[in-house]
Structures are given as structure tokens and as C-alpha cells.
Length: 342
Image (cartoon, rainbow, N blue to C red; front, side, top):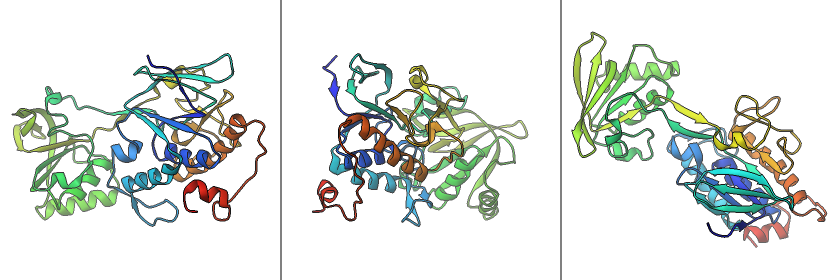
């Protein structure tokens, strides 16, 4: 195990809210390291729907989820954040000097003055459908998220599911795919009615095939699927030709080791105050979807607001003797120098 990394703050989670935290902390001269279980920044935005548009970010009538992540990384860059991807913070303890000690499942250790939890809904994994041998195809021809739409161009795509994700990607990939089959266990969908209506129009036009039934197996070699074995609504066994399978069976959300950090919890969420967004433990803050308080709304822009207030409270911990002076980036030359625009 290497020597502990010394920093002001450890941000647990590198999704949009965690990335914006780097910016707000940086304006206050607070250094941060970020830890995320995923292999890249962006959280669910990058992992699950990078090319989907978001319409409620101020100043952007429409921006893709990945586009937003890229802009946030660019905004944070002047403050030199250090990312630790593919790691999960397993333990957190209060040290004798009042700081915190954190250790990841890779043995990376930190010493910091404050902790900011921005872990979204916690660690999440797609639900794997009960199809024998599906593991052999995962990552090659079976995927649980669409990261690059172009990779589906000219493919025989099978989408399995009946919720919003399944219907949204049916509509988005139909123009690109060589063929697209939507498979659901019943002719009743949990998605937005408008999406269902659009899907049925494509089916009527012969651009999408709708099959009612369940996948029972996959055929193919070396990770490349060629056919899905399906038991249809008439209890007949059929084969659906496919080169790409997208099962959308939802996500399994787990709070993970955070549940063992001695914080007060409420239904797997972390209660916070609305002045500082501090948890039940002094010096530990929670922002974004992982926290809860009266009137909480789970929007990215609300997480940005929470970060701004939490950063001011963290400043008092990191620099207890420093007089707090509020400055605007539009008029403060010192802040503009930090951002590299002067």
C-alpha cells in the first residue's frame, strides 16, 4: 500500500455534480481528488445515455449527456483535479487530528479535511436477464447501454424490454440499423405513451418488428451473437436473427460501503441540512441524488446549487482562519486569473 494522498477534499463520485464540485471548490483554492467506481467521468450520463439530449440545463436549450460531461470537465480543468477511476471507497474513518482517512478497494488511501459525497444513486449495475450463457456475449455483441450510436449502423439489433429506455432506443436506432426487433413479454409497455405510439407507427410501416415473448437463449461463436432463441406468445420457439442485443431490464442501485460510514440514513438516502448540505457527521457533505431533505428534487441543476453552498461550508473547514469574501467570476480579477481568462 502506497503512502496516503494528502488533499483538502475527497469527492466521492465523478458524475456531473461531482465535476461541478471541483469548479466551486477550486474557486475557493480548495484542492480535490475524485474517486469513482466507473472507468470514466460522467456517472450515469456517460454510462447509460451519453447521446441522449438533456433539456433543463440553464443556458443550453439542448445538450447531450456526454456533451454536458465534457463541458463540466473543461470547466473543472483549470483546478487540476486528480481522478481515481475504477475504484470504490470502502472505508472512511475520523483520524485523531480531526481529518478523515479513506481507503479504496484498490488500496489507495487519502487524508483530507472534508469529504463530499456526490455518488448519485450509489453504485449501479444493469440487471442481467436470466438467459443462460449471456455472459459470453457481453461487451462484444450484448450491451446494457448505448455509448456510440454509429456502432449500431447496419446491424441487426434486438432490443429487449418495455420501459422508457427500450422504447427510446428503438426510436433512435431504427433509422440506423439494418433491422430492428423489439421484444417484450407482453403487448403492454411502461414507457411514455408518445414513445409507444411512435414505435407502433414504425411497426405498422414495417421499419420495426415487434415480437411478444421472452429470450430463452443465444446462439453464436466467440462472443458474437447470431440468433436469439425466443419463446413467443403462442408458446412457440422461434429464432430472431441479430448481431447486437440490448437488454433493458432496469438497474440495481446499491448504496454500497457508504451505508457503513456511520451516517444517518433514510431509505438508502443521506439526510442533509439545507444550509450546508452537511450530513449527520461534521465535515462530511452529500450533494445530488444521494441526499434527501424536505422539498428535494432530483435534478442535475439542483445538485449544482447544493454544491455551491456545500463548497462555502467546506471553505470554513479547510481555511478556518480565513475571512470569507464572496466574489463574482464576472467581476473578480483574482477568480478570473484562477480560471486562466486573464
